[in-house]
Figure 1 (cartoon, rainbow, N blue to C red):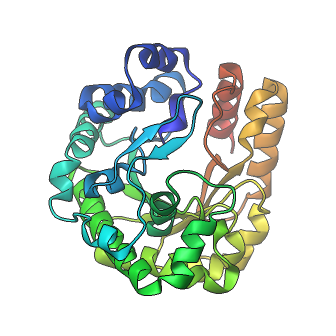
Figure 2: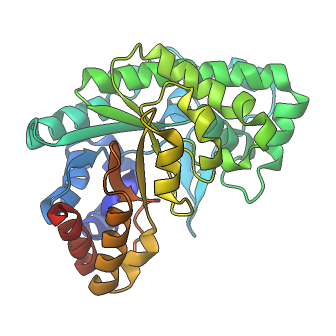
Figure 3: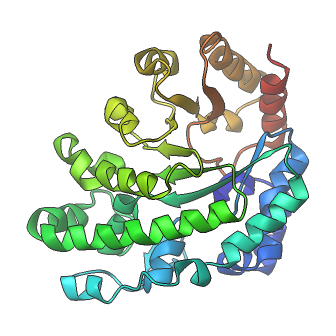
Length: 318
């Protein structure tokens, strides 16, 4: 996501000059931040610089960042009346700066590299909107699902509608695939995971009508891989807690898998980074449908020399 280049000095320099919103909403700046990691490393894909919360913002729920870090939702959803006031029309127009940035990136990288778009899952977006920001427990969001289930469904339907419009606009701008981030899926009780999250992801994928492949990242929820496979996703992206070869054997050829090196390794040394990457690559030797990736975003503390060691190890692996 937007974290891809945040360990780079050139990104930090831009952050001294512009706010996050200025970077994300100015196509030229979003292009620049997207391309910065590709100039440093032999990466196969560019993922657009943006944020999952642009959809709630376009619907009338703006977001900001607290002085000491963390997201703040400026208009917390509390009732059905709040949900009914949300706008789902003209989403592509309201978020036109994202497709504009994507078109610039596509022109810059050509057709040789993959260009990825993304959005947040309806549950993850709803959780932020209901809590007013990040939470350690998500009690407010879960209580709303239990106590106000018809209103919860109304909110999710609106988020699905907006997400389909947004991802179709990204497809029109030339993305090769999109990733749906169910970042807070693990807050859902296992028995309710489908009702709270997966059924809404499935609706988004169905609404895209097969235009582009969809990758689902469900942090902490790989034990629901069978259910995720039924959403229509083409790939499952997993965090570093998962035994990737075992998961791939379980899924066979139904889904590609993406992951899942612990990003903490990038805070160590090039030698340890190479060893960890080589070990993961060897463990997946012979498995079809594998995309090497980290198991989460890059930490700001990641060392450039370790990223160089990582990308060299992957690109030279045979």
